[in-house]
Structures are given as C-alpha cells and as structure tokens.
Image (cartoon, rainbow, N blue to C red; front, top):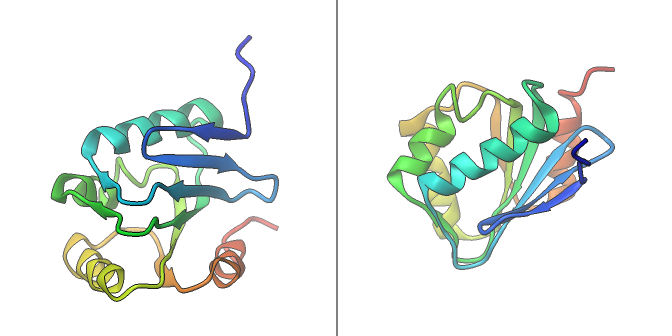
Length: 131
C-alpha cells in the first residue's frame, strides 16, 4: 500500500493537502511554469484526491510566469477537473496584468479570484467547502 503524504515537493511547487479541505500549491520563485509541470501537478492530485473537487489555493512565487500552453491547460476542463474554486495570491503589478489576461482570454470555468493575502483567499475558498 502506498502511503499518502500531506506535503508533496515537485520541481515547480510544493503541494499541501490540508486538513481543512483546501489544496495549497506554493510555486517556486523565478519559475516559468510549463505544460509538463501542469501534468505533474494533476497526477499528484489524482494520486491524493482522485476525482474529488476541492478549493485550490495558489501562492505565486516572485517572478513566476506560465507559458501560453500552461495557462490554456490551467483554464481547461482537464486542468480544472479537481477544482471547485481557485484562488491566486500575489502582490505585484506584473502578476495582476497576467492574471487579468488569464481571466479575460482563458476564461476558467470555475470561480477564480485574485488576492493580495493568503488569509483573504482562505476565507473566500472556505465558502466552497461543503458544510
């Protein structure tokens, strides 16, 4: 039997499967997120939560960006199959510009919101947890 860990370290990020039901993804600094990274993240979700839909908290690293393919995948039905809602935490103008571009052109199909602080994002995500 494979033991499931609560914290997984990948090349692009650390993923925590929190006891409160939120999945927290902390991306590396100076990362260019590639499509292959997205596949690795999705495989980790599949291993740990199967097909379950959960709120996902993304903490964006300094100077992080994503390729066009990674952004498109992230907003696709396949990229969102484990997500009931997505919160992104960042506090830089370039990330706000990229985020607004993502919302306008990639149009994720689950509730998606940007925050400056982790506590604000957590409050919002917890509204999607089943009582």
